[in-house]
Image (tube, rainbow over all chains, first blue to last red; front, side, top):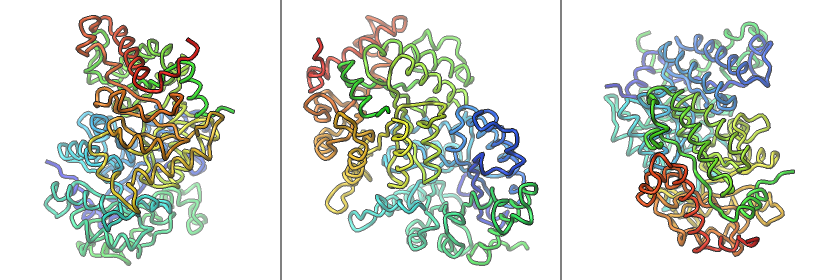
Length: 309
Length: 309
């Protein structure tokens, strides 16, 4: 029986890095060759460009990283054609051996939550992701259907705990019974991780905690000792390798660090623009991925992952 | 320029009722004639049955109620074909003069929230809903993109405040600075409603607060005096007309009350089964809708809406 916590541990160990590549396609940011002849008002044409782009990004990063994270919103924006592109992107990533964490931040009550869980993680899921991000506002009985489907299917769930955006604190930092809201959510999540423990000390239920709040990452690593932490906010949002260092355990495991735009649109970054540009955009994706891998290796315990040389 | 708060006010006044019909299709619950010959493993076939069912429900309720609320999860479960069915359902409802509140409970940070807002409320939206439900956990800068698109386009946003499920209180009821979390969210929402006020005293930004917590509905009506309240949890979840009475203002405006299963699957309810059954299921939908309209008229200020006789 598959276990998402173990699968992620093994994928991080195999690739020697916790880099998670975010797939956030936007037509205006695609390399020029992929934008050419695409009518922005034609959702099917744009969806086709998204599929091609995401699959080509996947081809570059599949040998280098353990997982990718498609952002549902950008596909959803294109309607049914975009959702088809999302399915093709997930299938391609899985065929290349990558774990797929769907970033949908879904949730609802009871039977509706079960429908979302089935949609993204279930046995007959069209999208067939390995894990899904979910929002905790609706409480425990809204999270249980996701947790149940994930456990039955060997999948994973990442619950929003402390998000990377500047306004995330408005509600997440409110202090109740001596602890901020995000800490209450963290305690709930770690309890569920403990109940779903794999053979490497981590559960199938994870948390999202942003690179932009390094002090809270220190706290959250301590209180969620059995929980995988998905860390957004690295790169474009300002988080550095030093900022995310606290998210890892002493082996360099227990956290995956996402970068989206800084990797997939690396051809437009000042440091890669001249060497690669639009024509060699896949070279820029590879260079940006390798740069992030190196930064995490030199500044965090993720450097200990490379033991086989 | 359209204004969602005014549009909803006018639609409630025109139909004389605040009943909101939830469209939550599930294959196993459809009337027998619509399930016949549908292979549950064929998403396109199931999506076709959903479209037919939802459109026929819409045909029954369009002359009776102001709005419908499709639940995205059940369509999403079918993949791209389901999202096509969702688009067709929205189009049909709009062609029949109904307001459409998409129940997606979406959210994300910054530019990703903007993508969701465009997907459901934007100028080139494939789904073209009039309003969207959103989750507040990510804070103010995650809500602003939805609010901005809604205001630009004359649309609406309903923010989750106090949800109807038993576990909703786990985080929503945590007390910070002397108030529960839901009250902090309510204060934020009402401030945004005041900033988006229409000509009838209500803003374009609304709140979701469940029928299953009648005491909190009293409190929330008081503190959100300019906010439309979408009340789920009536009927199948146990909320009664008396429970929701406090959500209305003295004119019977300011709240819409959702019922999903108890209306759309009324053919299976004990009180309608014998008179209608599967063959006359649309008659059961109409009878259940009229029953709910009558219950709200006799037990709440919604009875005052019927002024033109």
